[in-house]
Amino acid sequence: MIAESLPTTPADRLAAAHVAIARAARTAGRDPAGVELVAVSKTHPAEAVRPLLAAGQRSFGENRVHEAAAKWPGLAADFPGVRLHLVGQLQSNKARDAVVLFDVIHSVDRPSLVDALGAAMAATGRRPDCYVQVNIGDEPQKGGVALGDLAALLGRAAALPVAGLMAVPPDGIEPAPFFALLAKLAREHGLAGLSMGMSGDFETAVMLGATCVRVGTALFGARE
Ligand SMILES: *Cc1c(COP(=O)(O)O)cnc(C)c1O
Image 1: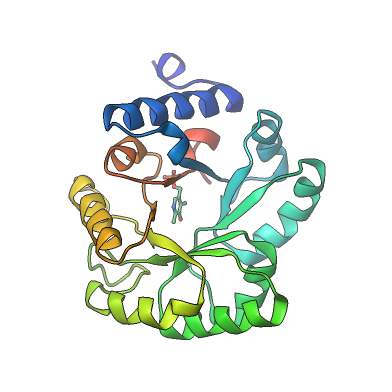
Image 2 (image 1 turned 30 degrees about the vertical axis):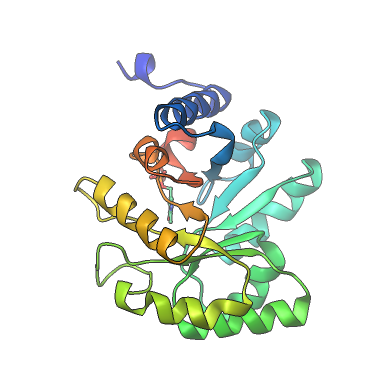
């Protein structure tokens, strides 16, 4: 059954994800080219990543600065055009390393991190796109700014290259209302970018306006 439903090679899984994204985008009257697929390669070794690079994939996501620094410089040297996304929580004392290594940072969620990123960008001259992460389900254990603090944080981040909003909806319940809420917040704040949707729900996210989906398991298989 699994063999029938889950494509077996990484390149086939990548192609299937692109087909699913395109179908969802067209259903919603959107141009599939407006959706960036980020292949979340966290925990997977370089050998697992190479087949996707060979198949043309260039956007990848990692959740730890240290792991990405060990894995990516070598891979990026072999495959020009890699765009590296940080999708995990970022400590302020790693802001400078993150700004140097990543092209997109999806987890800007508090004033101290905004300030650390601003200083790191000024010091390095690098300006990765930033997403402000919203704690969309108001879950204490999750990262992201509280809804009530979003406007103030965006004000503080005015000097950063803020591309949009990012969220991870609560586990185990229908994600669509949370995606719709994130889209509404982005609209209210005049932000075009919407980083939302993972392996289990990226088609729903695309239908509700995602411009960036972060997909790991559906491309690489389960993590240890
Ligand atoms: C791990 C992770 C993903 C990918 O999750 P999958 O369910 O494996 O697709 C996406 N976004 C964030 C923030 C993650 O930490």
